Length: 169
Image (cartoon, rainbow, N blue to C red):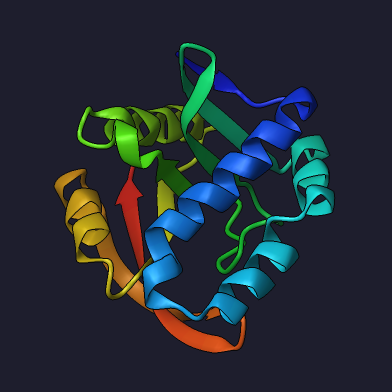
């Protein structure tokens, strides 16, 4: 089941976000940088602000009442880079390690595209770490093409993301 997250989901969403981010990127980064990122980005204050914002949307995919994955979508002016009112940013998409390979990521990606179309957006865009080849292939397979790069700060470490977009209309 995929549903829009609510303020009541804050603690479960925060714990899941921290866990999946650590599982995905912990081995590539220092403990200090990971902790800084968790404290800064995945704070309860930030999640509460996001969940109450009209410009930020979270969708959860659940199995047996447990979060198996989520997406974070940003409308302008809450987008991280472009702030294009004709677009929707897919800032985060994460699937639990035990749930990978079952098509849940594709379902969440389809949900993001459906939301963008409902909101009459022309395209969906995202940033993906240049070294995450699996994710890059996944996005390309689902119609995304690279169009630029940006710097992503993980703690004190400067990393490069590839910006990718999918035209919807």
